[in-house]
Image 1 (cartoon, helix red, strand yellow):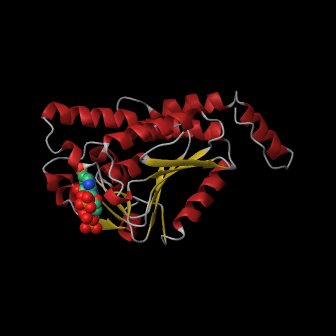
Image 2: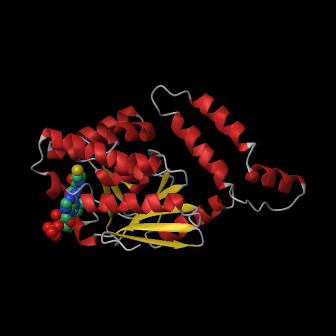
Length: 260
Ligand code: COA
């Protein structure tokens, strides 16, 4: 499948999705959000795809936010729809994606860009990266999950300060804040992402999918995460991956997971 605003390339089980509007610092317009939804939908069904790496093209930006030029004259109703549709089609879709999604933040991750990175299962960053939610400087608030996911990751006080000040933090501060897991040079970032993806892929992706559900349940209103964990734990015992993983261990050999 070919896209206009993103690149999607699968190799050895790793799908690399690159947001590709470098002249607009990869800002997320509606077309890009739709294409990302398409690419993730396709990846969900494609058995060849084991792990997804999400990054931005060029060395300057991951994503510099939602495309401000598209919503500058929206009404309150259109604003509400923009947030609701975007959250359903992309941000929640990525957060609940059954396969691991790693965001490789290669520069500015602002507004919707940081929200997209926060929807990914975890983040790594290059040392030139700058992150922030500057929406209040435009007279609006984060609308793609930022007010919820930033406090979950960095704590309420830091999230309040970042959102109220509309400021940016650099990669090292993001590391201190637990917003990203690793920082490396821009040149090394793709290798680090691949290294982490390859490490993850050695394990049972069926089990990983259950773990993603159980971890996410901790953040869902009215859902008992411990119960989801018990249910996913039990479910794992019926999978071929569990049979393979346990028998490989007991027979002192490397597991070769069938993925079912
Ligand atoms: N929406 C639409 N266009 C954007 C954009 C966004 N969020 N972020 C950057 N762009 C565009 C700029 O308008 C410019 O386009 P042009 O060349 O056609 O004028 C191009 O990308 C390059 O950006 P520019 O501002 O010239 O780069 P810079 O290096 O001077 O500044 C930033 C970089 C990230 C600090 C600056 O682009 C910025 O503040 N962007 C908006 C960030 C933001 O508020 N995001 C939250 C949106 S809710």
